[in-house]
Image 1 (cartoon, rainbow, N blue to C red):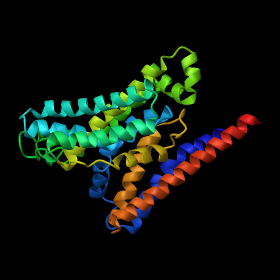
Image 2 (image 1 turned 30 degrees about the horizontal axis):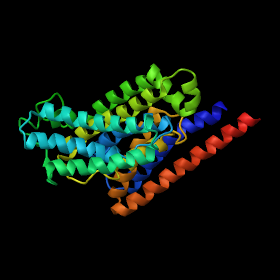
Image 3 (image 1 turned 180 degrees about the horizontal axis):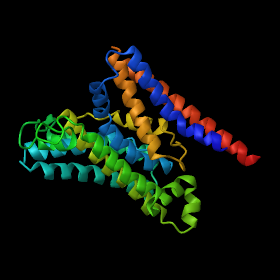
Length: 327
């Protein structure tokens, strides 16, 4: 049983290593510092969303509003900066607060009104996408570039400039590692994490044992919204331009990373370490296919293949564990 568990844990790192090795051999200068930085840049916002939705999937739920929640927060933060003249720190705080609020709304609808997570978050997805466009009047929001006083936030969240201790250092990777560490402790060393696993393992048993299941479930979705807000900050820092009606579909990249990392869609089990590895699998795959000159639809196709493979492996693992219990 231990060997099977170790194999399951090693599967995602093996896929990541094989993909990186393949693209390094077949790609054009893929094994380089510049390519590695591009992989990191493409991982920041996906990584933050994936960390948040890992908690949700462990409870047995799903959140389809990740991408539009992230973009809605970033859009309204950009609107406050460009239209109201707010200082950048306050705009970023607004972006995170809006995303956290959307996550709380999801949690209340699911936990207290008993809406299916698919329906509740699908509705939030459309509402978030529409709200951002309504407030900004369908205008593109632009964050200040590096080199301007307000553009200093890009040096803090994206990459350092020449006036920092290391020129062009991908500082976003440090923030992602910090967020991962905090989330790991929260999931594995606190009551919040224990209850998260309990909700996914057997919701009714958790309720009968005295856990205030509805409150904790709402907090899980609220936490997911918070991480979406952080993702919006890093998306804004990397790409600068935020377009209304965008973000739809980005949630699939985060969910795919979680599934590839070994978190079961049935709930009750999951790993943030696996999630981060799955996010990098997605980033290496997308950057590698782009490096080979394949167009976006090929990237989408192969991403789907990897996700289906990960789900099939998870189903096989669950069936094997059920067979062992019967024996």
